Image (cartoon, rainbow, N blue to C red; front, side, top):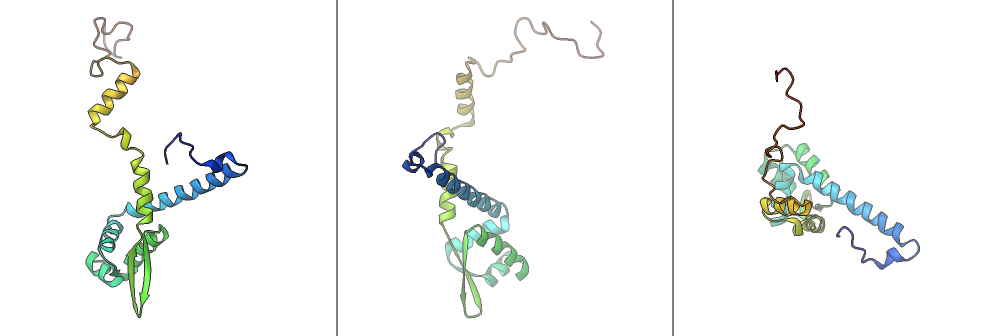
Length: 157
């Protein structure tokens, strides 16, 4: 979804904009939950491991050196974010990765792709946009340096 684009014909129908706004709010809330879930290194590792192959909860606890209550807390956050799904087989619970929330995250991050580049190039482009010829020139280093400025407090002229 790009800022400023309005490709959705439902926005031009009565009630369409309200429905679309509600959908955007749900998508934003889902994205927030994904970002919160991925903010923890234990949960990122779980997502990585489960992305390679389904894993038993007990395997993940042993791998991370966590107690079962601790791993279940992390798993609950991942499930709430929609990143993993629990599957019960006998007495063992397995987790699988749900890639759809990661695709939404990738889409959100991708909107900034047009702005990416070297940090210096981004800065230079912004300076040109502002009409600054030399972005590295010190605006206070001109020929009349100090003109119109007060001396630092406590100094004598």
